[in-house]
Image 1 (cartoon, rainbow, N blue to C red):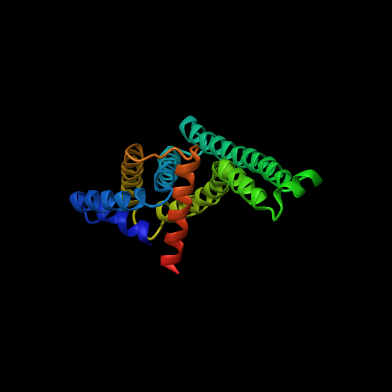
Image 2 (tube, rainbow, N blue to C red):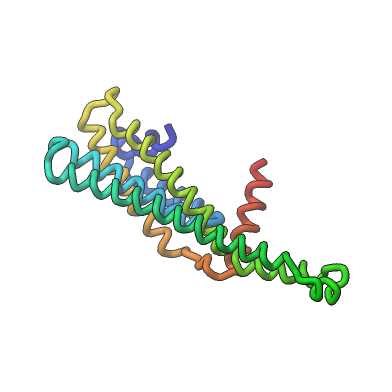
Length: 213
C-alpha cells in the first residue's frame, strides 16, 4: 500500500513534483541508516527489474524483450543465491578458525593463567572476521528482500482495479524510484571490508533495533 500510494502520486494524481520530493526524502532517510546504501541498491535493482519485466510483457509474454527480461531476473536471482551460499561457506570457515583459537595447548593454558590472553585473542579474531559475518548476513537478507519486493511489485503493477494505462504509468514511476535510489547509494557507500567500519555499522544497526523496540 505504501508503494502503491507513492507511485499513484505520479501515475494517478500527476503530482510529479510531490512524487520526486517524497522519493528523494525516502532515499535520504534510508541511506543514512546502517547498511542503508546497500539496502537502496537492492531496492532499486528490484524495482528496476520488476518494471522492465512488466513493460516488456505488454508486447506479449513470448516476445524477445519479454523473454530477455525474464532471463535477466532469473540470472540475477541465481547469482544472489550463489553469492549467499559462498558467503555462508566463508563464514563457516571463519567460525572454525575462531573456534580453533579457543583451543589452547597445555603450555599455553599455564602461561595464560586465568585465560585473559585467550579472551583478547578471541576478540581480535572476531573483529578481524566481522566483515565476513556481516557480508554473509547481508547476502542471505538480500535474497529475502528481493523476493518480497518482487511480490509487492507484482501486486502494484498487475492491479486490475485500475486501467492498464495507469498500470503502465506506475511502471514508469517505479523506474524513476529505482534510479533515485541507486543515485543516492552512490553518494554513501561505506566499505564493510574494513573491520572498524563493519563494527561501527553493526553497532548502529543494534542501536537502531533497540530504539525501534
